Structures are given as structure tokens and as C-alpha cells.
Amino acid sequence: MIQTVYLTMTGGFSDQEVFTVQSDRDLSVLRCILRGYSHEEKDTALLRATKPDGEVCYLSGILDGENAFHFTLTEQMTTVTGDVLCDISICRGDGIISSDQFILKVRPPSAAGAMTESESEYIGLSELIKNTLEASEITPEEIDLIWEETV
Image 1 (cartoon, rainbow, N blue to C red):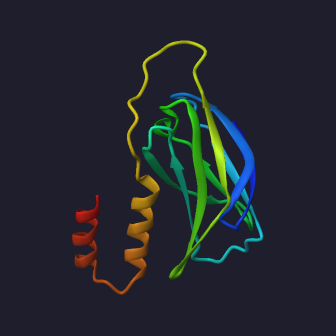
Image 2 (image 1 turned 60 degrees about the vertical axis):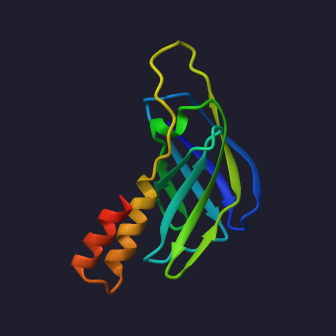
């Protein structure tokens, strides 16, 4: 299932909400359309999601058109019911711009089943660091050393 949210790049708060089910294994896709944003070739999108228990997940996005990104929600993002506070950061060269924050509402499942324990997830953040290092003028050996220290 694909859900769409429309955001501006002001760093404020949006009243838009999207919904999913706790520990959803069907992995929903979130399509974020960013108003007032023009894509540049080297832009990288990162979704930050802070769960109600304080754990944080970072996911990288896939460009979808001129001003939209797709994010595939992971099971780890939905381990805790309640409001997950989300925002999108666009990393562009030396700068970062952020979208309005929005809520991912995680509802309890209709049937009880095995639950995944909540923890932080840094998939997108790790990818962003690796891509940034690879694009810099650091040698491959230095990248490997830095990468091993961050993962």
C-alpha cells in the first residue's frame, strides 16, 4: 500500500497523518511530495522517525519524479503503537533542509502475534554517510577505516 503526504520545506509542523499497523510485515510505502523543493542531481533524502519510546529510525528515500521521494517503512519503525514523529531531510552538498514534521500513527494489530522488540535503526543514515564519504576526496582506504568505525 502506498500512502502520500504533502510537505513543505519550512521545518515546521504539518497536520497530516499517515496510518499503519504495529509490526506490519507487509511493508507500506510512504510517498512524500515536497512542495517548494526542486530536485538537484546529488540530493539525498533521509526520513527520520522518532518512535513513542524514543528509539529513532533513519531511512533513505528513492526519488520519484521532480519533487517526491518513496520510503519503504520497515517493521522496526512500527514496533511501538502510538504517534511516530517523522520528517524528511534533503542533503544537498554542504547543506541540509528539512520538511515539516508529520505523524505516522501506528495502530495495534487486530490479531495478536509475535512482536518485534523496538530499537533504533540507522539504515538510511549509514547509507548517507557512506555515499558522502565516497563522493569526497578521501582515499578508499580512509573510507573503509571510517566506515568500519561508524557501522
